[in-house]
Length: 341
Image 1 (cartoon, rainbow, N blue to C red):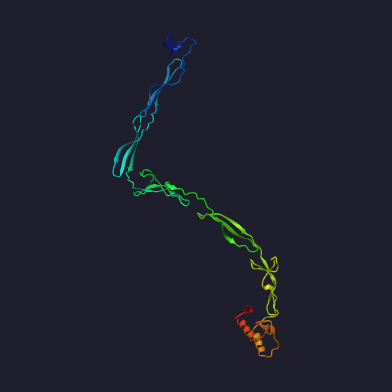
Image 2 (image 1 turned 60 degrees about the vertical axis):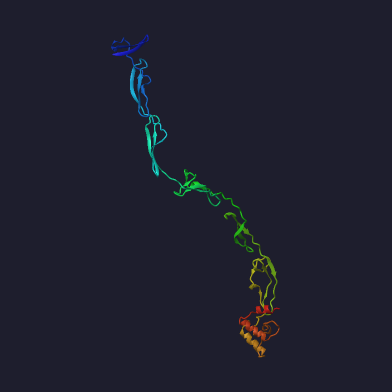
């Protein structure tokens, strides 16, 4: 049996028939589904689900092809402002429940217990300590003598930490002082010297700069020392050049041939006090001179060498001076210096 729907003259009609009775060449009706539509809609709220029927009709004959019931999920709660419930105040604390309700359905969304200690701070004002170039400063604040907490306000409502109160120390600008010398190595006549030229900050004493400077070698300052001729009994000295800076001795005016004082000696003709002419001065010479003075016969003697006090005469004074020199009580040079005038 096939049922066909049609409309004529504004009237909907249904015609049922057995497709076996259809005229020859005719075929059965096939539905053409249209877009799904919603019917019997029940809106959802935040307290319960909603629903609707999803219906599909044939676009040709308008016959209902399918109907399925759909669920609409509950809506999310809309939180309102927190409110306080079950408030209890004792001598040392306040407790309450902080509750949030949905503004649409009034359902309770959350409930949080809160406990607040009751504290009365004893605050003392601490003035600002300005920062310097050497140290951090501290902002003005209040400190409680009861709990040692820190606050930025006199009411004790804004708690701060020590780190919050730090005023960073000022950026230091160096003030250069006069340059000073350090690690000085003096120059010699021929070798350069050096020193560090250092500048310190007059405020913090920090080293600002250090530069190595060279001290140029000045060279020798030579002067001619004239020859001192030897005498019969006293050594002489060859002419030479002496440096006023390093006190070295040189054989040439250019200061290239350094010499020693020993190498400049011009030997005397004979040894002073060598009366017996054996090349040395010793106690034997004293004995020989004593014999000469008492006119005791001696083979030969050096009368010039015997005049050790250089007064032009050979006498007992010469014997005494020879004995004093042998006893290390004086020297020829010391005698000469004392009696040169």
